[in-house]
Length: 97
Length: 513
Image 1 (cartoon, rainbow over the protein chains, first blue to last red):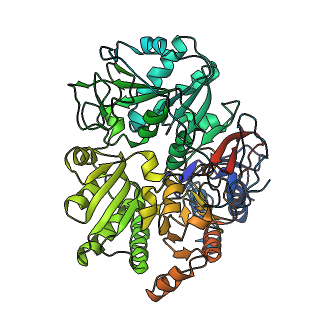
Image 2: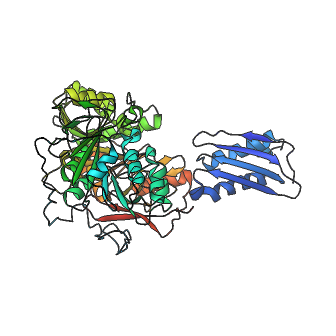
């Protein structure tokens, strides 16, 4: 497991997109996700699960993630999360590159 | 009890006189006489002009518990509702019911009047903005009554919505109570939604900021029903009343839906001389009109009339000879006002003439095709235009259920996915318009036809249209976006949704927070 070293962002606040901001968390804090979404009632849990799964696949932990969702599909959420992680210094697994 | 479309309706709802469940779009037959309006008289020397609203309140007199009615042609530029209710509050009145044909964000002060006990009931056909949100969170102790535009006319005529005082926001008036909507700084066009109010209310007050010479003409609402005329500084903000121009969407998905919808209409075979058409002013609806127009021009078709809320686009079609008449219950822009004032083929009609189900024939019955929107639709084709994805009220039927019932072919145009949300669900949160009156759903990914209309399905298939089963379209959306969780609502009923015939088609329950 690794952690990130700096804050980074990916995505926009356009409709059907999500803006993902990642920041290093305190040691032992694990994966903390804060979600704001226009479809929170219908898809809130699913969005959190996609973000969490993406971060775990990259074996990153002790990270704070803020997701400002404007109705993005799962593939978009996954892509924006990966890009934010990459910009924050997490080395992506080979198959993701 | 469950009504005819399977919605659970309580047998008794506190604050609502009588609950008749929806039995089918044409199943409920009236057995009554119309409400007899109060007989009035004034003497030849009497003067109707009153200095201010306080004086009118005292002359009538307005008392606790009365129902005050208003119309919504001033939309988000309306100043009259707030002015009148502020007067009521100032005079210490309580327990009033506001019967306002549509509620807009500008009407937010209603919330304070409810909290102070000045207003305790609301009767409307559409609401958006702070009042709608507050209603959803339980603002009122008794449910709000949500009607259709035609249903409101019917309720007034049949005495189910009894109006004590109608306040008519009049862009132009003469001192003897003749009113029109085409002159003055707050010109709004048709005054159609106020016609039943003026005909049936015990007292009728015109509120205006433009006094013309007697006799004013044209006359939309006549002196014979208007008791008082009050001149105020300003009845409304023209910027909120009319838009300058109406523009057609540039959104490629919206255009694709509109183009498909136009092909659907063409495939029905109804685009021929005498074609009668209604469409909304927004998004894909107006774009559909643009595509239909091209087809009419290509085949030299002259339609009989266009109906409903009138925009400059419809006016242009009238002036180019594509339609012979416009039937106008509400105008949306400056062109609509100009046309109504100058063109004898542009007809101003009341809400009852437009859409009431209980008379000897309303205009929607003469429609060939209507294009409507939806926030949700279920696999039985029932449509929700009342509550949004969070369960909060953000609209209302307006003329939706009326036009759907009347037209030969009713088409819903909608994005299969709005953001991430599929338009098609198993069960709409709030049923507004029954599926039996909806014929076709047009989305960017296919067209679904109501199984009741096998005749249409055959025509569409022959025309090569992308026909899909509604279940198939629903699954397609869910494959892309995932299956949405149902929105949770509380038990408290904040509004009853009345079908146009006065039966209850659904209820709206309180949302948390």
